[in-house]
Image 1 (cartoon, rainbow, N blue to C red):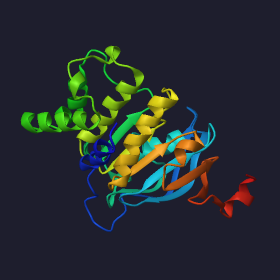
Image 2: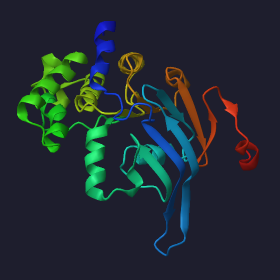
Image 3: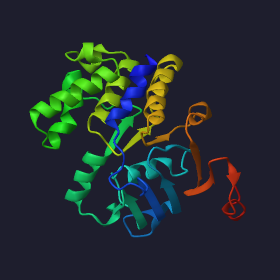
Length: 259
């Protein structure tokens, strides 16, 4: 992919609605899962504080069971915290009802998944268009956004193809197009290279790098330190808590939890 195409991807990731306000602010976030009898099954997150500024590229790392998936579900408004506040563009989504939360998720968040999550019986064009249709966007605007997004990821020549006719790398490019077509405030990438070989994984990272270089806000979960190095800031989770951030210096909580 050309550097020009990658860089211009950021046209589809808008700045947050309120300049000077972080895109994401987590304050004392907890998430506890309970057994049917009401006793605690697991405390997945335990007092997490995290700020993601507009235009920042953050990588989240941690071993299995550290809380990465739970955090991404909360950031993506797919789950609610048990306690604490989650401010997205300055609005506390933890207080929203289900309908409002769904609207915010569709308008402000773009998702890229490890498994691509494309719909097999829809064409490339239809897969990218579908979230815009759910938002009630006019047909002319949907066509403009879908066409531009697919051009940016160099998949415009495959609009009539189905996911089964594409390679893994091509499917993930379509997934990126779907994520950016909605003009989100933040792009959440959950192990975006996990199902790809090194060549295609590198191509996806190039796409994300282009988005970031032009001001896009990205939060990525990855198990691979090589890919985490692409980010501005790396957040390491252990047992539901952030134990290091940015330059890897340990915080005081390390001694308390025996990390």
